[in-house]
Length: 409
Image (cartoon, rainbow, N blue to C red; front, side, top):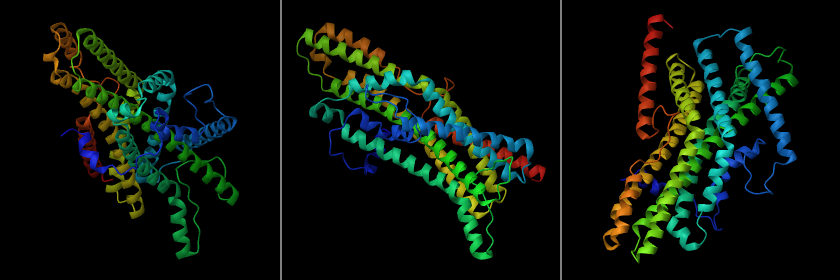
């Protein structure tokens, strides 16, 4: 059974009442970007960046620079109290770096992605019959259902990190009547943060930085997933056309096979373009995910408190889910693009003209190499690579654990 079929029973998203368009498939990623003032794409001449978005973008970038400066400043003026605090600092900086790399990849490749999205818009089904053959509603439900799983899991953990200090201090205040000021992240400010207005300012700026980075993170990830899945849907529709091919006459049959070849070449080109934009960020994401998983393991074995255990356990789950969905979409892409050749061999070619049959061999030969995503050309992304990532992370974790035991940490 193919990968997608395993998830069909999980679909719980209600079918949209209005007629779908290409923008509906991208409402989730663009909503994250828009919320933090980022405007990377213009669907038409009326889709412009507003003054409010420019203001929000300026404020959020200034705040990120401010927060990153004092986070790095911590290494120069302070010392880690324990291994737990050190791994916690590296987890935070890894998450931030991952979000930046993802967004920078999109910014650098925005012209390529603009071409990809506009092309997918031209390939979008135009009438009810095409929508039905395209399985548009099912595809819309599928991608939004799984996007929501990734988004909700991420936000749950993100808000847990950002609000946890307030909850912890509040619980302690109830028992001891003493309020201990805590901040979400480990930074070293060159000023006293104990005065209440200053403490509130620092907490708000850190909360804002975490929120913005989460939007960067989710905006880039959902953009990748939705774009790859739109290509997957087009491959499925192409297979549908091939399977339901009925030979008529030589001219019409040749026109059909020519259109199929052109569409197949175009879809492979779109998949390659998406891979060119995201391959570096996928590689960095793999490397950072391994480090995150290992460091979370360190947090657990060094005897973290229960609240910290829950917090970093959730971090581990969120990081794993994100990598899993990238691998899932790449696997779907490989399966659907490879099925084009099977569809060509299974159509009623034996009823067509001999010249058509000869042309068909070329089409089958071109379909033997499936489209896929890569981690900067080092390896292909698939469910197998997801399994390898988890295995590699576990091996690093056991090695680090043995080193820590030998060192008495």
